[in-house]
Image (cartoon, rainbow, N blue to C red; front, side, top):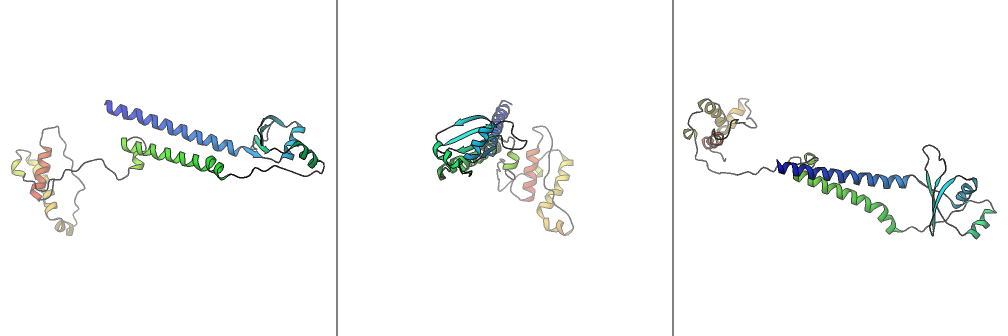
Length: 222
């Protein structure tokens, strides 16, 4: 019971970390999608019209948020700075102008590919832990896998003569022995070998001995 509780507690922590990771990735993506890139000339017009609520100014970029954005429209914007003298000169001709930041492959990798790989890496590790401990998600990851160990005994010398009592059970199991000895004959008659036999009873009632006896009578490994 203590081991089960410990595994359950670990599974809860793994699920909690996975949920936090999903929300973190979602916030990053939403923050990217909700930002509109606008020309510097449009930024100056919005500034004059009083439609900008707040700004964050860096060396090359200006980030800010719109005042009362339209429903469904981005609430924030980013633009590349241009020297005030050059911007003033261009504004005299009524043309649209914007700054350009040279693309950086390293920046693109760090901003998109790395978070994506990190997310899937964490997800696979968590799913593998769930599968190893039999927690949630184990059924999806470990379909067809079993932790059961097979102890194969090539030659079993136990027969029904070694089993005392249990006559009714013995009679029913003798039919199974016939199936195991001559499966082709029963197959021609339309018979189908059962996929398994369940022996129910408290410990010490001879279930394992009966199973060995079936294997011994049929001359098959136990």
